[in-house]
Image 1 (cartoon, rainbow, N blue to C red):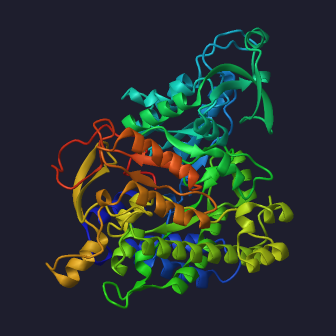
Image 2: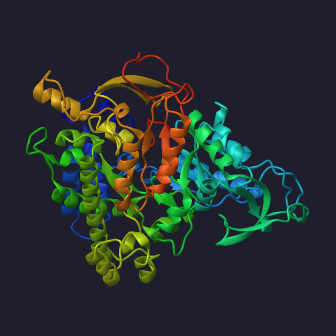
Image 3: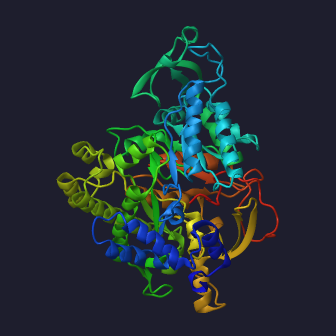
Length: 608
């Protein structure tokens, strides 16, 4: 077993999160996962199992954590990391039914995303009983308590995303919610920012806060005579809304940015771009994402995730002949696509509505991890244009291989049930695909509606010898990593970056690696540029944290978000070290010291 892992922490991650029963070593885990995924193949199961096993060995492909933990295990666990729940009804019975659905989903190991824009703002009266609404933020506290309760029962750590529209009348309360250090600690929060708001901010125009008129009592409608048309969750399309209040757009935008600057939340989701780029925009509207933001989902959707380890595809590392084997990467992407498609047939789903949505669209999210380590092995600095070009080439190869494989799977097993070919081919992302892929879709259809996403891949990258996670830069050569214990609390572990360890093994004390760039040495603009270089090949979204220095000025900080919108990104998340946010990574600290009061979704990415 010693040969499986290069650090005690990697072994601990396997033992406490992914090992099933009495598995003797990591090879047994790989065999369990490969056998389970191959079991859904109609023919040639032994051959597929061997192919899957070879891709898992050496950490070349890292399925999502729920797949590693649950595939082939005879327990009521879902293999999907996260879900987006259905619209929260605007009545007490419906609210508690939605709470129950979220609890059942989390009980089986799935994180949840919920949009709370459907709930009446504080102060409006109910249409039936006449009570005064307390607003969405107050009801979010129920979800927060539920998540804490499940955590206390020993279920894996919960993860939740809570969203609210930027024109909801309670948006300011939502934006400031995390200023209370005890409030909504099991949530990530994101504002659904529309193009209309960004235009109003640019023009220094007024901004209307609204709510659907058909959800308001007659007495309230009489008080608020102004009307606007808005695309509101819980409705089939644009709906007439009453204007409850108007404020300067820049005032609201500044409030969002100030809260983010001070507390790291809320993040921003550019919801109109998400919907405009949605391959299934012809049949669904999206108002929330999974907790880390890489999978925008409709009601009852789920994320089926896996990451290819780019560092494993570097040939002749630390040499003048170092190259990234794009052909091998593409071949692996095709096989990984088939594996993630098999997860859909293999997995249990907590609720019938989730089963219908997941099997109707057959969404998957194949991405990359280990980008920064691969760049170091290739001698490329993370912040140089050549590094972005290489990353884009890798993601392009992965994306096109995944789409070609999915077309082949449609011919073999049938296309996804929600496919309407002409409408699908008219989607912007699909229109930009190579002509042979589009021709294949027109002929055979396609097995999966969406195929690519870039997840944080935090815990599975720790498993793989402290690989740099997702597309993030390396934090440092050596670091103190705080990891949550299953019995509660957290412990510190001193670990060495994967690429730095390989350099040390090969070159001893020689200074280097020359291309090594720690996270604090990467400018926020370079972070954004890397994310933007990959977005054209990601049909879902990208989970990326833009690290900013603690001393950054507010104006420069705010400009990052406007720049993210200008670059065509689907969202933006930043992290500025301060006493509120704390840190789970440190270059020098007492491993036994307690960590900061953690968020649900901090840097440790405990749910993947």
